[in-house]
Length: 161
Image (tube, rainbow, N blue to C red; front, side, top):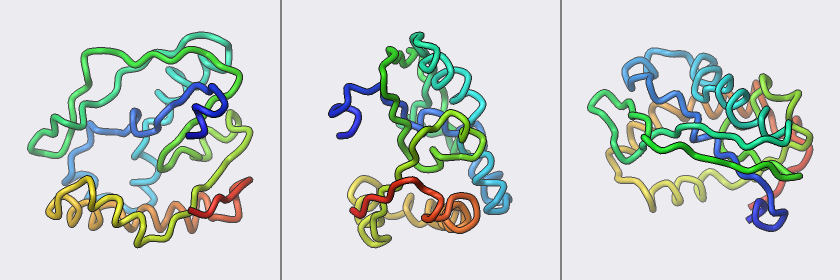
């Protein structure tokens, strides 16, 4: 893993998923609105990236993805995630190169995997019913993100996987 190789601070963008939005609400949004709101980039910026860039410990609360509510929202975990400062910060995950964070990102890397490989990885960890609804909800947003917001050509480095 990259973070281990560089003894880096690792931030997972999934920790900042906008989980207070219900599935019904996500389903009513346009692909552009989903991309704009799926990650709470304001919290990501204020609670994780900015403190680390100042050389300070970062702390934030993540969502408990194991405790999904009937409407598709998730509660926050009680414990906080702590991350010590390091000379390298790795921000990983879908939508982690949002334009709102561009001034803080020095190198953007796209790990480019074929769609069938991504789908197989998802299928290995999720059940079929969940995947059907997930693809119906998010495939258009991913297409929008990688065609309009961050096309492959906008990344500093592309790693084929």
